[in-house]
Amino acid sequence: MLLKIAIKNIKRNIFDYIIYMITLVISFSIVNAVACLSSSEDILQLAENMGMLKNYSTIITILLVFVMSYLSVYVIYDILIKREKEFGILELSGMKKGMISNLFLTELTIVGVISLIVSMPIAIIIQKALIFIVEKIFEASNIKLNLMSEHSLMLLTMFFIGIIIISSLRIKRKLGKASIQDLLLEQSQNMQLKLKKSAYIFMLLLSISGLIIGVLIFIYSLSEASNSIILLFFAGAIFIICGVYGVSNCGLALLVKHEGHPKVNGNYGLGLVLKGQLNAKISKNNKSIGVLSILLSFSFLFLMLGLSIGEAYKSNIKMRSLSILRFH
Amino acid sequence: MLNVSGLSKYYKVGEKYIKAIDNVSFVVTKGEFVAIMGPSGSGKSTLLKTISTIDLNFEGNVTISGKNFLDYKEKEIAKFRNKNIGFIFQDYNLLDTLTVKENMVLPILVNGDKLEKQEGKINEISQLLDIEDILNNYPYQTSGGQQQRVACGRAIINNPSIIFADEPTGALDSNMTTNLLKLLTKMNKELNQTIVMVTHDAYAASFSNRILFMQDGRITSELLRKSARQKEFFYKIVSNSMQFCEEEN
Image (cartoon, rainbow over all chains, first blue to last red; front, side, top):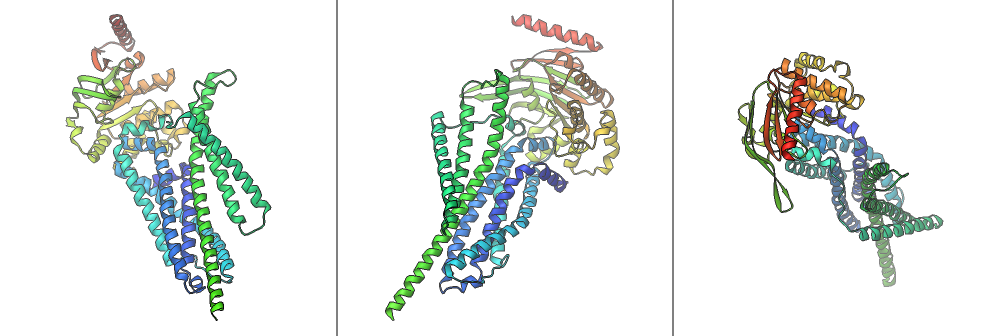
C-alpha cells in the first residue's frame, strides 16, 4: 500500500521532485566523476606525487558531499512544507506519524535511485571533461577511467544514505512537533518578510548590477578564445542566475511590501488576484533558481580549484625540472 | 458516547491569554445528530477541534465511547482516531493523488485491512452516497458536492463511533447543501450514526435533533427538535437567534 501511494505521489508531485532530482543527478555525477578520477591508476601513474592530488580531490569530494547534502535536504524540506496539508489528511485518517515519514522517505528513495541511474551518462560527460583538463595539464593522452570505482560507489552510497538519514530526522522532527491543525492550516499562511523595504531596494539594485556584470562577462567570454574561456563563461552564467534570483526575490518582496492594493484596469479585486498569483509563482520559481545558482556556483568553484591545483602542479614540475637541469 | 466536562482552551496572543472556550460541558448520546451554532469567533470550531483529537492542548475531560484519548500516546491516538472518529470538513480535504474510491477507503488502507474483504461495504456506502459512478475518478474530476459526499464516505467507512463535521456545507451551493444535509440525516437515521456538526447556518442546523448555541466560548442555550418538522425547527432556531440578538442589544 505504502509503495503504491508513494509511486502515485511521485507522479502527482513530479514538478516538485524535478529540482530534487536535478540536485541529486548533478551531485551524483560530480561526486562519481571526481572519485573515479582520483582513484584512476592511469592518473596516479602520471607523476610521482600524484597521491597528493588524490588527497586533495578526496577533501574536495567530501566538501562537495557536505554542500550537496545540505542542498538536497533543503530541497526535500521544501517539498515537505508544500505537502503538509496532505500529511495532515493522512494523520486525520489514522496514519501514524512514523508511517507518514516512511511514505515520504520511500518517495525520496525511489526518486534517488532514478536519479542515480540518470546521473550515469552525465557522469561520463563530466569524466570526459575532467580527462581533457588533466591531459592538457600533464600533456598526456589515452587516460582511461572506470564508469564507477569502488571508491566512488562507497562515496555515493554514503552520500545518499546521509541525505536520507538527515531528511528522515528533519521530517520526523517537523511532523513530531506539528499538530494536525498546524499541518492542515500551514499552507494558508501568508508569506512573511523579515527585512525592511530599504534593504530590499538595496538588494534589488545589487542584483541588477550583478545581472549587468554577468551579461557583460558572458558576452566577453564569447568573444575571447583562450583557456580561461570556460571559467569566464561559468562566472558569467552564475552572475546572471544570481542576478535573476535577486531581482525576482527582491521584486516579489517589494511587491508584497507595497502598501495598498495594486489597481489593475481600475479593479482592485483583479489587482489582488494578480498580486497573489505573482507572489505564488515567483516564490515557487525562486527556490528552484536559488538551488540552481548554488549548484552552479559550487561547480564553478570546484572547476576553478581543480584548474588552479593543476596549473600550480604543472608550474611546480617545471620549476623542479629547471632546478634539476641547473644542478646538472 | 461523547462526554465533555469542564473543557477550557486558551490562546496566547502576545503576552495575554485569551479564553477561547470557557468551562464547557455537555453530553452527546449514541445516534444523536447535534449541531453547534454560534457567530464567528464564538469558539465553535475550536470546540470541535478539541473534542475530536485534532487539538490536544486543552483543560478538562473529553471521553468518546468511555475512553479519554488524552490518556493515550501518539501512536494509540492515531489508532483511536482511525477506529472511532470520522471527519468532514468545509474544504473536503481529499487527496488529489488518490481516486475517489481510494480516498473513501483510506481509513481501511491506513488500518492495514484488505480491501477485498470490504468490497460489499464499499458498494453499499457508495450506493448510499450516490457516488458509485465516479469511484475511479480523481477528486479534481468531480464537483464540490460529489467531493463532499466522498468525504462523507471516508468518514463512515470504518463504522466510527462519532462523526465530526466542521461547516460541511460552507463551500456548497444551496442545492448541494440540501442534498448533503439530507445525506447526513440519512446516515444518522439509517446507520444510527452519531454526528456533531458545527455551523453558523440556521438552515443547516435545522436538520439536526439538538442545537447547542455558543457565544464567547460558552454554551449559552440549547434547543431540542423533539417531534417538530424541519421547517418548524428552522423557525425556532431563527427565533432563538433573534431573541439572543435582542438580549445583546
